[in-house]
Image 1 (cartoon, rainbow, N blue to C red):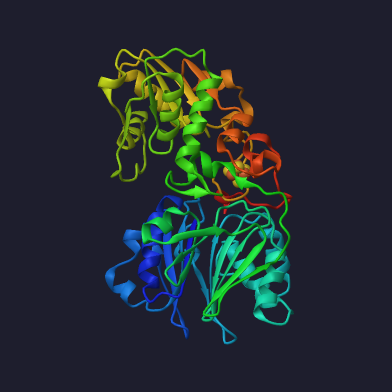
Image 2: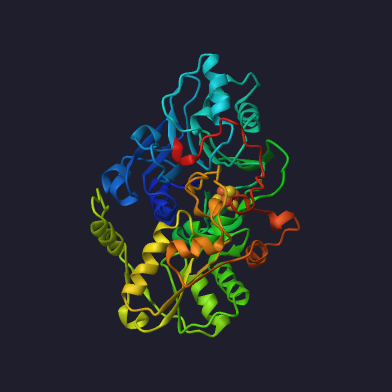
Length: 459
Ligand code: SF4
């Protein structure tokens, strides 16, 4: 998911709309904006893309000097308008709206506890849990109640909470998901990725620190914490494929990082001989350019992405399924015909997509297809909000590299090493793995995982 918030600007809804556009790649299932004019909170939201949800009319009706906004990431079974955020809770003691990026690992645990003491949930998202915890807190004052609620949460979260008086901004103790603070004239802005600042002309100020709570209001910005930082563990997959190339995370540019991953990969398979390097669009283009630069094998546009595809609907036959893939991706025959092709991709999850692309390149006349992956084999599921499926579905959890190579029909297969990925990020931290979460590769999760933890796509 992606979150955006702004305080202190008369065009807050319009700017949130632009912000969400920049964050659209982080979620296509639904989008929403909640604004406040200092008296009431108003929501505009719906299922689908940012462009489908908002119109000139509904944005005009959302007047106010502050807003929080959200784009929702596609997770199977978790759809429906009641799960589109920000979630808005009306109450006589003060309304609040909340937007969340990430996945809590103890949500079920807390939910059962809350239900036993009388709470009723009206969405299946774990975000609602935090609202009940705030409402149930006996601490004096809203800030103390929020701090207590946040301190009980385990897992990944970047939260924006809007009331008529302030925006509260919080990031989990490991800093698993990105969250940056910026400034647009006198207004404060927060966003999952810095590309949202660039689009609205805001200046980057700093990252929100793990365990930190910021309170932004007409009085300015107050810095507080709800817990001390624990092992810093920014999601490595944000660098590998999730974030946009023009964003910076911890002041490290994503495109440049992906290029370094490609370079490192080329060093790690220096034995490879080929005629042309191509990347699977969009997220692997940067790594492919890096690979080409380092190996001296020319980069070419061997695969084209069609941006205007519809859904592939029900696909009863193999032939129709193959056509469905071609709707999304096409080979450039002139580039690959009669060539030994290096195909750079960011990851292999189930292996089905890689297999189809290899097949497509061979049908277009490639004599050899060497697959190189700019991340290590993904052997473990992610519990923190990236939908990488269960153990059973992850091809690398049951097959070794040779077996995967055979399964996808490639002539060779090389994954980037764990050290290669960590070093390519060039992050400035001394922590383990330079402060990256690498759990889907290493199985070393930075938080406790509870027995009733639900995977993001199982909700
Ligand atoms: Fe990211 Fe993998 Fe960690 Fe999930 S397990 S947060 S995908 S690095």
